[in-house]
Amino acid sequence: MAHQITLIPGDGIGPEVTDAAVEVINASGVDVDWDVQHAGKAVIDTDGSPMPGRVIESIRRNKVALKGPVTTPVGYGFRSVNVTLRTELDLYALLRPCRHYPGVRTRHPGTDLVVVRENTEDLYAGVEFEAFSVENQKLRDYLRFFRGYHLTPDTGITVKPISLSATRRIVRFAFEYSKREGRKKVTVGHKANIMKFSDGPFVQIAREIAQEFPEIDFDEMQLDELAFWLVSDPQEMDVLLLPNLYGDIISDLCAGLIGGLGVAPGVNLGDTAAVFEPTHGSAPDIAGKGLANPAGILLSGVMMLRHIGEHEAANRIESSIAAVFFSGEHLTGDLGGSAGTADFTRAVIARI
Ligand code: ATP
Image: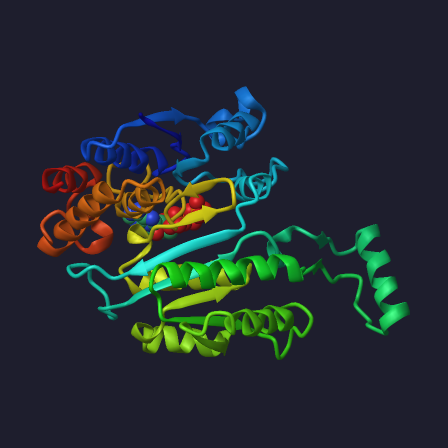
């Protein structure tokens, strides 16, 4: 029976790279019934929102989606489309494997790590108080009266909520994932020395849950130290467990370690739905030119096929992507080659 999968082409280079992914997955012989759902700038006039309810409903129904980058138009007052998706579907874990494939230029060959990012809280929760606003003044008055903090009226405030329950959920997810995938070590990144009541419990809970997984090493690092180690010796790292904001920044850094944004895959996971998408955004500078590297979404597609039990096809596609990288003949511009999206895709399909 065909797999029902939601396909969101998205904005910018999204449609080009999702087309490539559909071609490759179809060529692998896996039977997929693609439920195409447009989102982003193009649907605002017809649907009244860049992330309409029908898209969310489709993912709820199918439980699996493959998604291109969808941008949130600035200045229209829309909530971030990605935050909407994550909140509506409770996609609490963002998993970004960063594995170097031979043939892709990098200063760090042999890097093979995974970023596990908490996806719902932290400074991205959207709890904000604009400078000079009435709400901001009330909050500042409260802080002065009850805690003696003096903040000037021109101070904008963003709140960093980190709950014990969401932390337990992501920490458990990271350890269970590591166990299932045969990973050896989980390193938690934090600034608990400064943010005692948000990063503090994040590390403490990680320490506690680590004891239930004696087969997996546990390490904790200040985020600045982690950044240093990542650009010095990333081969020593295995699974990185991070709160939302640090996870966002560190995953782009890790994409840089393995050859760039064009090759980095990912998935947003919840208990009932999974949305697979590359780490890169819409890359408006190269959109519509046929130059985008589709490897990030192709490798996201490989993760998706494993998620739905199509391991053999996933292995075949991953091997052919690795072979194209290794041959060096059909690399896109971001990897130092001169091939376009279609050349790379054709080369992958030829090797499946
Ligand atoms: P957004 O605002 O949607 O995040 P952005 O342009 O700020 O978009 P990205 O799209 O993530 O950020 O990427 C930054 C740059 O990296 C792009 O402008 C592009 O030059 C390059 N890039 C990203 N993805 C790819 C890709 N798949 N293939 C080739 N180059 C890419």
